[in-house]
Image (cartoon, rainbow, N blue to C red; front, side, top):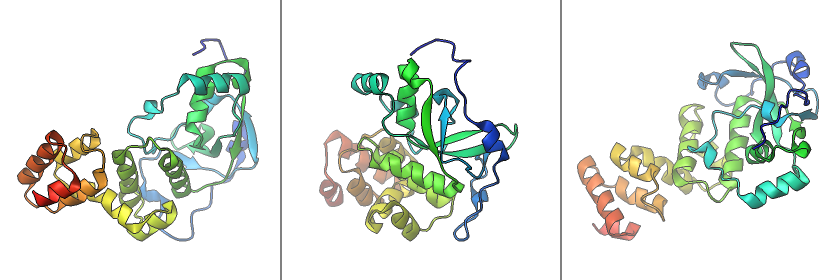
Amino acid sequence: MSTEDTSTTTTPNTTTAAKGKKAKAPTEGVSENRYDSFPYELLEATNPSEEVNPKDLIFPDFDSRTETDAEKLDQNFLDDVKLNGLLQAPLTTPVRHKVTGKTGLLIVAGRRRVRGAIAAGNAKNKVITVLTKTMTLKEAVIACGIENIKRKNLSFWDEANYMRLLRDEFGFKQTEIKDKLGVADSKVSQFLAVFDLDERVQKLVRKGQLDPGTNTKVRALKSIKDPDQQYAVAVKAIESAWTAEDIEEA
């Protein structure tokens, strides 16, 4: 990564964001206030795009990945970004920090691309074009999660944790989650079922030790009501490479 001084490069048009109006609250669904820990107020976008220094963009704290840095930037990707820049503009929404009042642009989609531009660190990537759109917090969370879910290397735990965030922090019903994400109702049930398991079993899932077929194994383990027995069967399933059918038989 380049260590050059970028103080003279173009920064986000924060004046535009500061003058923007507060984004309108959604007319249906649960109030945005359910996610009280979110430190930013979302503003109205007044320009369809901005020229920005990628280092000045804000990465969301509701990213569904448990390991943000694990968006592994392989060398081929970095070489392409360094040579061609970003071929697809990231999507952002203007925000204002609730405490400091500082304005900026929150990355909604394209976080990996922005990291690539920062890591490339060459002249072609010191100023990038981003799209800006007025969004509610719920819309931003949905868009951020959908981008992650479309990526093949998203873990079972990360996807389940994201669906739990929608349910517990935003009050989405299961039918709303499936409709927003475009997935089957049974898939949502399987992912959310992991949080009904014993905490020790949840830890095994979080570490990825029950893969592959985690979703069906979780469903089988959920039928074991005694937590100690549930954990014992989960450990045995890992040691013996059991399938979901093996767990059900046990």
